[in-house]
Amino acid sequence: MQTLHADVVAISPLTEFVHKVILKPIESVKFEAGQYLQVVLGEKDKRAFSIASRPSQCDELELHIGASAVDSYAMQTLEHLRDAHANNTKVTIETGLGISQLRLQCERPIILLAGGTGFSYAKSMADHLSEIGCDRPVLFYWGVREESALYAHTEMQTWANSRENFTFIPVVENPTVSWTGHTGYVHKAVMSDIASLSPYDIYMAGRFDMIGIVRDDFIAHGAIRENMYADAFAFIK
Image (tube, rainbow, N blue to C red; front, side, top):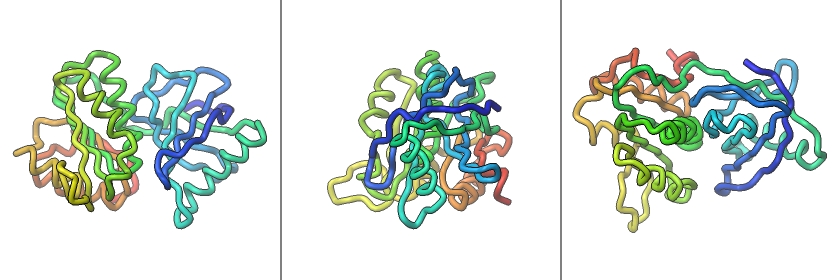
């Protein structure tokens, strides 16, 4: 883990409730694809967010923060970052955290599953796999409630088009009549598409209550627990 100061370079909206934050640390950062950082608001107040950047972007860190009036955890962090940006002051961050980073030492096909802003966790891995020329099959499932939340749909379709072994599958829980893609819960779409999950390494990010359900359903669908990765596992039974 590194503790260091960073400038808040930019904060821009991705949707009504999701903001992209760009941080520039005062020194290069070392992290693995799929790790997260903590924004330090106080000695005992540290807020965790997945890093959306790929590891080679060691001089710049990208976060996707979903914040609304009912989510004080994220909103307070966003206000802290906005204040620093407005006043040209630095924020303190702790980087290189988490134990659910991408494993590259095996040849198993990969499923990246993201719910909502859990997208940032999977994006870091997807971009890294593209950069290193990975030839393992990679299926990226991104589940959202409304189509408007697919803020990186075009970007990820471009990622999928970059290599024959990459596939991007957006899933909308409450689709409009014009939506022609997968619908319903994102993990149900995975199980509908794939007869057995036993051959796969599976990386997951989303709400803790969601991840607990996904884990149990996936195991029932053949997934091997030791080949499933989510930092939420440390906080749920």
